[in-house]
Length: 282
Ligand SMILES: [Zn+2]
Ligand SMILES: [Zn+2]
Ligand SMILES: [Zn+2]
Image (cartoon, rainbow, N blue to C red; front, side, top):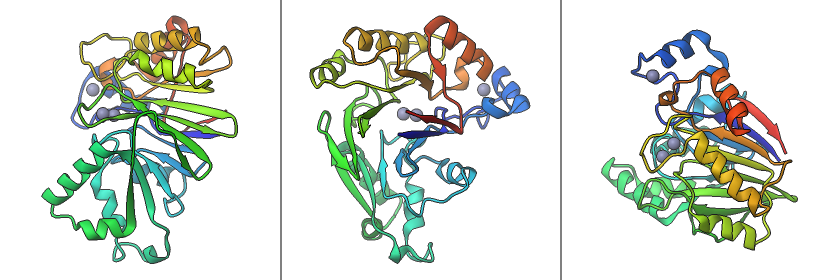
């Protein structure tokens, strides 16, 4: 599998829109890997994870549009992962050839789908038009779904309660990616399910919104939390020394440039740091 990290920040991005903190100023000055947009990954150029506000610039930056994207996995409904504004780009009067395109399928929890319809109604969006070009497919925790050759299993994230946010185990041709943001420290039931089902992870990609700073917020993880999850998985044989370990979904609250994050992640926790535009082959 080929994984393109199109965005690697939390909602506020780095630099954040209204911020003048040391990290945001420095990131703007340094550019490159220090500039992070909202988290999104594209697998094998076809399976998209999340549909946030930076989707358009991610695709244009990658030198393409979304015309051939058929399937989108949505982790949860926060605006950095799902923005309803993109739906209307599928309307026939917005796109010259929409009627020729196959329906775009969005896979997410029933809680998120309910919220989509509530928000769409409040904004006066036409449900009939949305349903004409998009299909919402509800998924349930621990129930694998076959999507064009991928087996995708949603696992419980500790985030955005009570809507049922998802982590995703994505498997194809004997390889697997565990996409683990946004979430607080995992429930052990995840380890149990992975071990009991003989799962082995080749890329473990984890929430690192807090960086190396511990805060009491329940719904995100720090570098230390991510390391603890990796240790738990290793003890059960879910990952091994060959597994690629990556932190992603950073906030300016972590107060570290890319180089500083990389050094701390490697030296203290044995992890790598994802950056916007990073391409991994597993
Ligand atoms: Zn997020
Ligand atoms: Zn800032
Ligand atoms: Zn979130």
